[in-house]
Image (cartoon, rainbow, N blue to C red; front, side, top):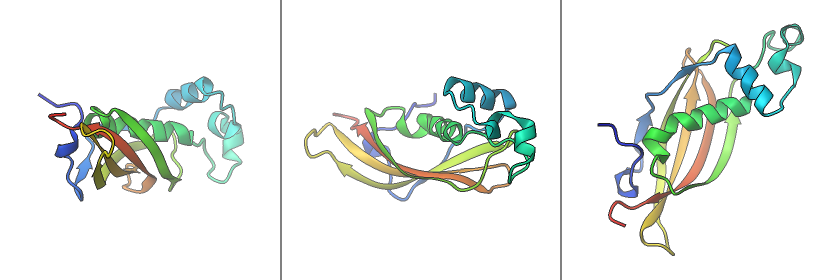
Length: 151
């Protein structure tokens, strides 16, 4: 049986977790996310406009890529989380295009016990996402509030 997330004690500083979830970005994914979030910039939706842009093709919305990669990490990282406390240093390292397949891995950078509530701790992680060519496309860090196993 697969567990969903980890308790504070189960995270090892320096450990790298390769997430099993991956996804090929479809045109419908990008279109739906653009419409739901009201991001109607033609670089994301208009082939003719995109053909005349720097990359010559439609760019996938960066916040979709970020959301997707955060989702990849839930089963391994934040499935038991009380809260994601922050996201820091989000960088879009390379553009993402329709048809790209996205993968991710997360390194555990640090841990500290909560000073005010002994039943939890904070885990600091860095997630990196890659395309099918193993080119880094996204990097971000976050602090996650995680319960301890025996509270």
